Length: 183
Image (cartoon, rainbow, N blue to C red; front, side):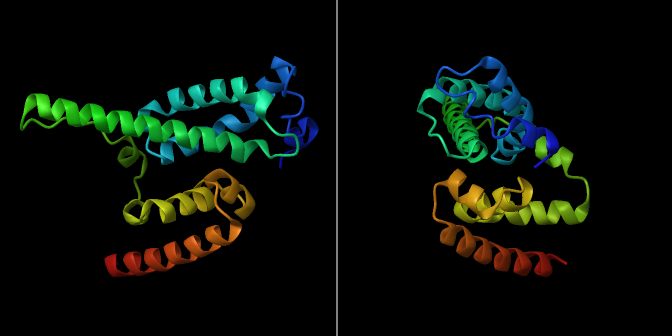
């Protein structure tokens, strides 16, 4: 936690029911970078900013339902993850409709994540992470790419801490095997 975050505290209590917009603006400033990383990692790509903005709007509207004592970051990341998944579902449905309409023509979207990953080892690891089943991939993304604690990962994914540990262990075994096979 940075000194700035400690000075503000979690900030969620101040921005809660009847709270001030300024307190919520502080929360946005503190948590926007990790929210954007989560959106990108959950497949929002170039639309990550839109996903994050929508997530913050929904979080602001839901602040009266935010429970005192609950951590804000995992709660917010849950909203971001849901928004990214909704975007992906909508995109998939739209692509399927377009494919039915156009027959054999395929609709392609630029892979912005591929442009970001330039190192061969990072690309290999990224591909291996992408091939993991969604529950294992989600834990790896939260723990290593978003740098969440076990407790924050569990809260964000709505699973027990033991599930986080076991999924992470299984994911790491798979990744070690795949990456060593590729080399």
